[in-house]
Length: 365
Image (cartoon, rainbow, N blue to C red):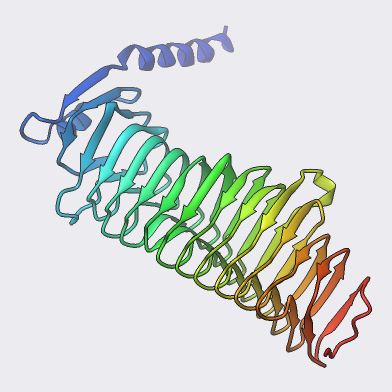
């Protein structure tokens, strides 16, 4: 009896929560901030549906709320002085079928908030489209575009699962900083941003297994990993093409893994037609490229792969040809192991270490 009573109490509490859940419809054409008023009266588990354009900014502090558009509802921050949506410490929030626009930030999750965003467009924010600060989120089929800074940025130990989403026409696409982690699923696209497409740094990390990542036509680097950042691409497909500087740049003790043979997940990384180097590995950073995920770095404006300033790399089964500079370049104390790789031109100075199944001995030429 003593064991059964706590279980019964927990069950009754759960039933009580479910019984109190309500569906609340908001007509955004009504006066006096109808969405804000509805949120103030909402209980955990409620579902709020939007019709029309709500010209107001909202803060969510109640757990387990769902806000979704009937068709596509809109939350419009107006003059951009306040965030369109702030999720402050609330857990298990769902935003679905929405346009979120014209806020200072589009969506800001803070103070341990957890939330899901699906089938939503975030646009024209003054600062970031979506920002996580000590928060966790799942974004699926989300487009973040035409924002003043980042399409999506996560920082301070945040966690993001990103699926089938697009960051385009922002100052920068996706940023992962300060010990935060992003996991990539499906097909994610980071294109036409003014600077970098995808940035990982300050101890941040990015992981994918068998997914697709397109980082093309950005104004600066396609992928920029710096200050102890770590990116692991385990199979799947990466394209970093036609970017304004390097296709991929590693800086300040960062690392990039392209394929892990032991996982058995095939793929290809295509790093072509960038204005600078295909891959630029600098200042103690590390590149590890396995033949299970074929690395192709061709027709770039500078070197195909460049190692400089104590950086290092292991490359197997790659195609590095037709670049405007050297196909492989090593300088200033760098080292590389290259096997089963096709390349035409190598440049390396007397300070480097180079080995593999070629007859090249540095310095060369």
